[in-house]
Image 1 (cartoon, one colour):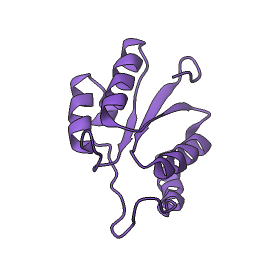
Image 2 (cartoon, one colour):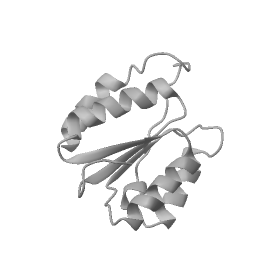
Image 3 (cartoon, one colour):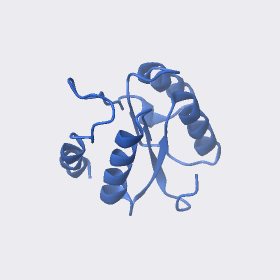
Length: 120
């Protein structure tokens, strides 16, 4: 952690490093002035992050999570994050686009900026 003090935090979780980096870049570009963006590569790591941020009094308005991860599914992670009291875990999730294999550059990142504009 180590974002700007007092900023609400968006969390992005994905075990595919290229997707995680791409989404992190897009989120920071779109929301970096108003939100801190934290990245995690696994559900358990992200749960620690959620717990630490909430303990520090940081608001988490949005969590983006891959659904298929080796240690914990995205659904399981979001359910656990809700138990910590994170409002961002209620509806937040994304799935890998059908037919996209691991290691390909994230093609959906371009469309993410459109969704970000709609949110912002």
